[in-house]
Length: 176
Image (cartoon, rainbow, N blue to C red; front, side, top):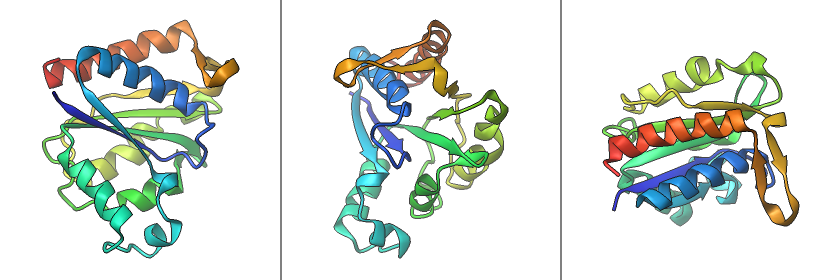
């Protein structure tokens, strides 16, 4: 069973980004993948800021990433880039930490003006970490994700089509 880690750089677990994360996670699990959500916001802030590689939480998170067959990198867009929280975690990932792993970016922002954040802000960093098979990813606009009662999310038809296509591409690479 392939292992997929969803690395969320959102500072809020109430973000609409989780609509994308939950949908992709459900699709991957239905296809037979083992999916683990790694919320960077749950790690000790001081350990992240001080790059404490001896922190049990940091060590366990990096081990989880190292053991993954694929990684989904998810973030809201702030100031035309991914979150600082995601950046501070990526700074701890070893130089070749993403080698041999397909990476699927999932991003959400307030406007289509930041559509290229994946290509211009994220992909160079993923490449520096050894990521050579970075999928096109999905960029969503906040309005495409509706918060529903009970913590569920409603996704626009267009977003579902794009997520299905990207998750299928990841499934094909994982031979699911």
